[in-house]
Amino acid sequence: MSESSFIFTAVSSNAHQLYTLLHCIGFAQNATVQITPDGIRFSVEEGRVVQGLAFLDKALFTTYTFNPPPTSNHGGGLSMGDAESDGSSYPCFVVSLSALLETLKIFGVGESSTASASRAGSVQPSTVSASSAFNAPALLLNRSCTLHYPRLGAPLSITLAETGVKTTCELTTYEPDEGEVEIPFQRDGIIMKIIMRSAWLYNAITELGSTSPGILRISASAKEEPFFTLSGSGGPFSQSSVEFSIEDTQNNGTQADSHRKILTNDGTSRSRATRTKLAPTVTETFLVSPPSSMGDRIKQDYRFTFIHKAARAMAAANKVSIRGDRQGVLSLQFMIEFDANGHVVTSNSTRSQVRDTPGSTVSFVDFRFVPLLDEDGLGGDAMLDEMD
Image (tube, rainbow, N blue to C red; front, side, top):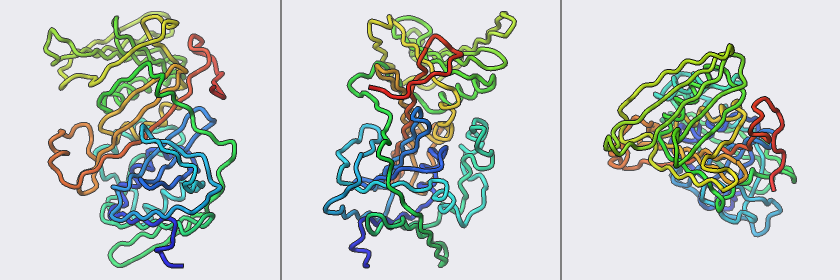
């Protein structure tokens, strides 16, 4: 069977980019894959309450060939961010994500090669070893990767080539479960949209994680302070919160307040406030429009361990879009940038460094979280199993 007749063939000159994006959603063993004319979508989920979506855009590949089959009994298109399309005719299957990640780094050793490695290591979920957090082998940067999907039901073939040595792995593909659905997010019912540097969210989650909270509460208001707050509670030690201020026009937008308050178990409280110069501001976009039933402030609770699963993406991303809909579903969409050499461009890099570098690419990783059923009962374990 010639490659020209394959359903899908793609070649990447930099396996590190693929590894980086897929490792961001590597909290589950298996991933649902959908091949489209614009790229490959990978989706993972746990308990139908947390879902990770990574989109490998065709721009990441030097060659990308997709020959959709005339008919397909694989349905249920996955979505990534705002780039949705009718995927009913596109191949969809399940593969072992853990095996795919191991394949992509088969020649390398687990040594840190990016600035984000040390950051991600400090917020890794307890089920992931620190050494595997975001430690893409440096050798991945100069390794080509070829993906083949010959026909429906065939294995997904991955060929890695380096200095004349080729290794080919074939991953068995499986039919998706008929009941498998993505967490619905109402784009026409968004009540909160906050865009900020991903590093700020990463630092806030790190701060809250130090008290081992069980619940993360997101609170946002456009009319009264605190404008945007992340609070942790339900842990064995204390309650804590990180507050962000929006632009202060009296200071020409050059300063913002960051507050952290801790309520100890004996009922006493202590607070720590610092005033730090931020450039330009903590939030680039701040839109909060709660329904009348919520008043002037949005408050929603999520399981902290689930939010924690996005730690790798927080560490790697340049920006994050925090969105919430009327159902309480939370979407964290991370923008991850690569320079011409395939290195991750972190939040500390300037925009001119990215724009002036030919060959740079932008990719997105999206996480969705179902809220806790009782937003006032911080100790409750009930969660929304299904959403209308």
